[in-house]
Image (cartoon, rainbow, N blue to C red):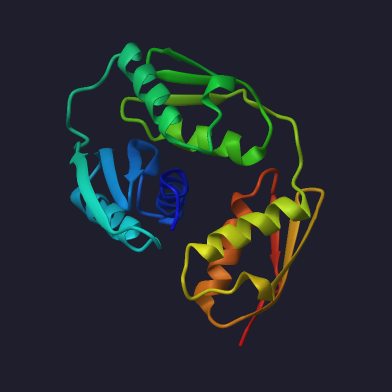
Length: 216
């Protein structure tokens, strides 16, 4: 059985992979198989998509859905509220080292600074902050220290496959060099191939993915 922290991370990762969900505004908690979704989305379809994505994660037994829909015509927010929302979203997201990132908001323009270990952390912070309601512009001054490794990318693909009960990560081979990840091997369907692609792109420091995977 998954721990609460692992289930929380798996649901957050799944939300981040669904294209039509603004996951940066969604909070996730997990306790004994019950996942609680909170936060704001721009329309009702995103609310339903988030619930559907969370329900599909292995280990989720029930969902408490507390997401609210906030429409574009709602009142604008102050710099203080924008900064608070960004800080709050950062604290929810396990991919963002919020204690290493600075947040500045002036006239609804957000500037992020600080230093992180991996490129995926920078990307996660950028995505989360840019999707907060009230943000009119964005400057990303976060510095990344490290480059991707074959082991890290492989571990991320394995973790992604474990979240799907019908996927086998052992059939995928990974090589990472100078920001480029090359995938090869055989999978049993397009779904598994997509899992590997998304996991590779989510790895730290990845700027290019060469997909040589064969679907059998």
